[in-house]
Image (cartoon, rainbow, N blue to C red; front, side):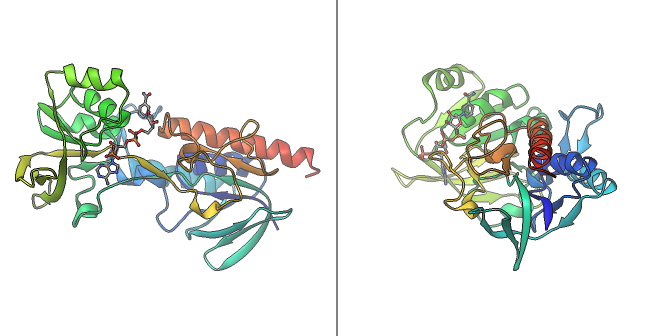
Length: 305
Ligand code: NDP
């Protein structure tokens, strides 16, 4: 029987592991096959406090892992395939193996939606990015594309104008999903061009992104755009599927907390991007992981541990 199983190994899960381990709970982290979360997809992280010269995303996550291990956290880099939160003890299936536990911290994060075109994986970090805040500064005086028509796309595009020579927003439809005010701000920016009914069909460039092939899905006209950077802002998908109908979610699948970081199920705590669509930063996720571990520790003590 475990004291606490932490599901997820991004900044939220790793910070929860550090705090739970230091509280002598000997946590088991179900870190996933692709451990480390979204920061494993980025190069330099320049906005995580404490690293004035920046730090490479995977190195930051590796440091967090070492820190958690130093205090006794155990890791299994396998995916959680099923949970049973119907009664105590709680049950978590990691790969093929069921584990019983008194508490669970769910920090499974989100996955950015991407286009799933060929060569996408090899070009991530080489022109393709899922985070303008993280990678925008690498595109000084470059041609940049932002995909999407929601608030995220407008926000990312506006942010990128600080660096890029030109930012093109490509929307697949002709309806803007973003709020009026954010759309207007982007529309009024002289560095931003907005293209409607435009879909990317291919990434161009050998080792680095150099452009994209596009098609206008109304006129069927095809073309190419030069671009050294392409930012996906076509939504995030919370990794909440595995929790099925056992934890309440909003209509987009983000988990809902009931009191502080605890969910509706006693002993199940939630931290990070899987419930936070708004801030989605490494430092806010780390803070949430800390809060969930403190709440879990207190709950376990109140319940006789
Ligand atoms: P949205 O769901 O609002 O928008 C997603 C956009 O991506 C849409 O334009 C959609 O197109 C497009 N899209 C989805 N799938 C694809 C695809 N496969 N190919 C091409 N385009 C695609 O997501 P956001 O991340 O922008 O926003 C999420 C939530 O967060 C919203 O509630 C938003 O208001 C909020 N938010 C608030 C901010 C703020 O207040 N500062 C900042 C950022 C987000 P289509 O319309 O054709 O479906």
